[in-house]
Image 1 (tube, rainbow, N blue to C red):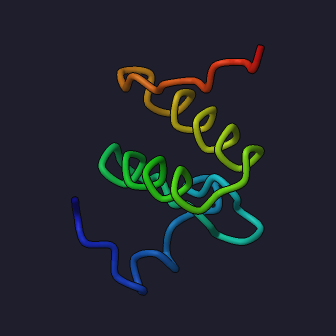
Image 2 (cartoon, one colour; image 1 turned 90 degrees about the vertical axis):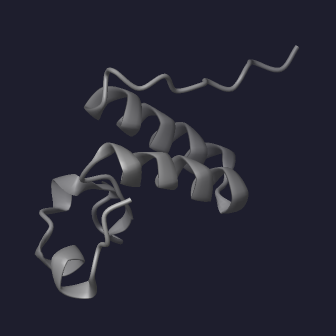
Length: 72
């Protein structure tokens, strides 16, 4: 994964974040998108997980993003 320094992170546009208001889960490239998926699966709420999955799937159509199965 490319190193994302504080200066580089601060320079990213809001559109590079899943949650732009909080500047959380930066997804400027595929490696950071994979990392965002991993981090949210460990620490995120169900709503956050769904939003990150959706944002990654929309931005990186070539990535396979597993969707959470509906509870039965």
